[in-house]
Length: 464
Image 1 (cartoon, one colour):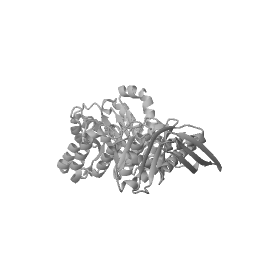
Image 2 (image 1 turned 135 degrees about the horizontal axis):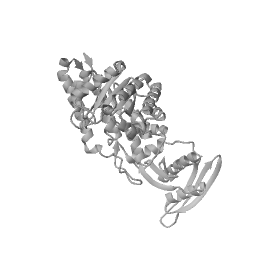
Image 3 (image 1 turned 180 degrees about the vertical axis):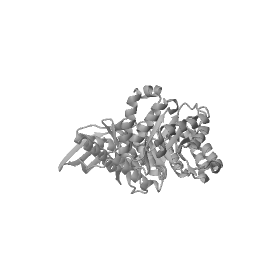
Image 4 (image 1 turned 90 degrees about the vertical axis):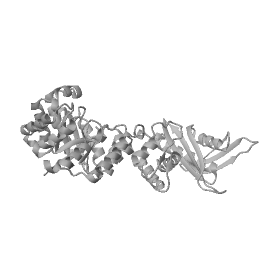
């Protein structure tokens, strides 16, 4: 009995979903027993790399296939993002019809042929599993298509897929198309031979079944949309007629409909149309809550929405502290800012608080005398201000000799009673970047000064 595999392209086209929703769908597909989960062309951006790494961490059984840009540097950057996946696959989607070669690649057929060999060879040097996808194969010149497939196999491709992007072939025509290719390229029997058919004319499901009968090993499917055969329809057909046709899949049919229903709900619900953090502006109080089930990419997205641009190490530190706190409670925007302030960009202090004296009252102007230590030298500053905290911040600025924009200032009690501990959060902006500092003390003015110095030290450290 022939075992047919399904490579799902749902996430390749569901671009409007949030990080969390994409990860949830990938996990459901993995649990379902899908042979491969495909992601769109890697953009090279940090956001895409984080998404790939996050999905890779949650997918254990399925192959994770990511399309590469059609250049060697793009293949390298894609592999850097994908290499930690348990079953990684680099995918090269190359147009093979005359019209698309000139329109998408701006290259003539002989040049495209050499490009296929070069790129597949490069991908193979990095990853054991490389898929060559002949885009618009059904409208390609047969001789060129066969030469392109042979070139890819000779260069090391382990999987080859032919695509009917127009979706105009009948089932009989597609079966004949597959048969002719197998005759023209006998090496196709040595690799995983796959097919994809657009469903704009409702032909994809029939073409997929016909292609299986003609000898393909893998079919492209989707949970929703018309980019490929419908996963639910095709899998149920194979389940019903598989014994008669001599074909089977490794999918978990007991969870099939439930998993597909969950994925469809994610794809069509209103929450997938905009990011939870999309409308948070600078200076606004973000209205969101995170919990222990949120991924690192979701937390980093929230941190970015708050205005912070952190390094990978700082993002890891923030997420580690977030996980510790979120086990006990939900984390709001204010709490996440406190985590950023206390966990990110922790640097050796350039300025250390030695002492502070504050004079304030309703009949005198507030004054602050601050003493700091820097490089073993004691430096003092004395200033007046509109209240004790304003005077304290101005005194620190007089010592440093520089004014930084105060983006936000928050104080709150962290314990109860008359001896309650006060927590202060200070956000300073320098060079267009946000720096957060956190301070805790039974004296709220002392907590505020410590928070200001904590943020200031981060600026000084980064400015060198």
